[in-house]
Length: 298
Picture 1: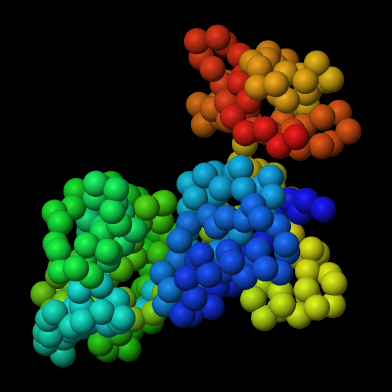
Picture 2: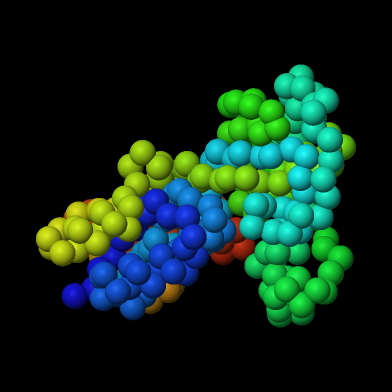
């Protein structure tokens, strides 16, 4: 039996994202399993896991906005920018006050330039940077634009500040911690990180691996599966007839009666059959003035 859908997993500390994928494969028996955005092994929180045909929409989940709760310790910088690394600098954070941190945070709101850490999965000539870092090789990294939609201080217990961060894809919270330490002149590293939200998936609705194991033993773990299209609600929905469904199955362009292309955000839309089956994601082709199947789910 093919299982299609998305699990909202609360990743435990000390486990890699691929380790969670392996656990889900074992429990489900489904070979097509993928995650929607890596969490560092020490980080916890929301990790959507796609199964079966839902793996076809992983890229759309990766693109969604994420929310994190981060504890940042001032006065100590590390080579990995988090608590798992080697200390590279110790600074005096005793004179840093809440107002100083609040003031420094201003520079990190909105679109910002951020450099990925050496200990990251970003590749240089096909090789992940973290592998080069382990060999003692430092590579100059290009900065990239990311967007911090919201940045709030939740708690201040010197020398630790707790932040809530809502950000775009590609944002490294470890880099933000390191950069905040540099801005304050004392150094800093990420002490603890929890992803509380990924797109529509919230940590309050997540399931732990232990709960999934128990549900598997009792035979009801599939009840935790969300349908694939639930993660695509930001896109308009269209209903097609039998001819339209056949075109989608064959990857052929099709015209739609619904006027969805008037919205500049809607370069994609969700397609359904008359009986409510999710057929796939369509992308608008300006040159042909037609919609092309982007992801076929049937």
